[in-house]
Length: 343
Image (cartoon, rainbow, N blue to C red; front, side):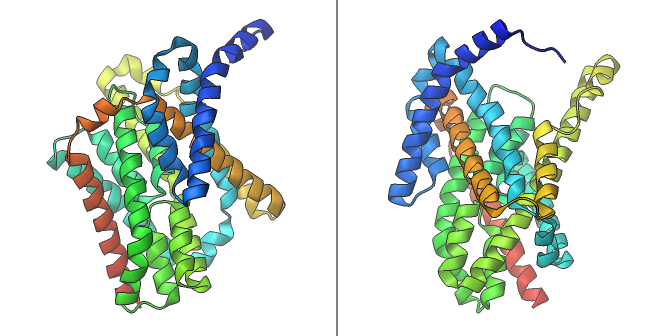
């Protein structure tokens, strides 16, 4: 592995500072708005970044913005591992784990099917399906980082983040009413909310708005969905690497085999989860890691917004909106039917 000389490392860091400062200012403004108006910090960061897209045209800022939207993102995803333990899997029960795994797979498959029906890029289907199935905006950003780079990838990621965050906020209000209308008890209501709402914050809000018991069930179920992020990323990486090797022929296939199948941040996620399972990580450290992960993700999505042209986003029209709605509806139907059958 090539290392940078001290002078080169200093020059590289110096290049990052202007862009990181701008991205940090956007992230701090989003954090203030999110806490003041009780909204999603990720959504505020994205919208503010989109409004300031012109800053990314300045060459002094481009390197730092790129660093925030890539490396900082991966650090944020890795730190999510300290939210989970093996006990979460045991608490949920193997039947629920299997049901969630099937739901995740079918939701991503539905996203791909709708992408074909609506004649848009398959990467958009993967992003929408994965974000809906796992953990909303965080999953969209993580999945985007392992997809093949393309001219439309950042635009598709932005669309997915806006869509799933908006629907997640709506679901936080509507889904508790649906569970009451269906006559679900507290645990069933919590499992439904945890299995269907996109973002962790909205799951917690919706679950505990019903009762502490429902909130606990919702949170544990949601964390189990978050745990599927790593297997999904590995599977996507494997498919992408195989397809690229096949397209490029046997010469490329040899070099592709040298590319790590597991992105480093997925390995870090699993290691941190296993470490957290030992009970050696103090609760203050877990809380600090969770806050740091949230800060990194807000910073990363601010960078994504800064890099994305709003004009390009609006050119896709109604199709992505319809896809996000139908994938969200499909996941809710799967969860509702399963819970009614098993209880």
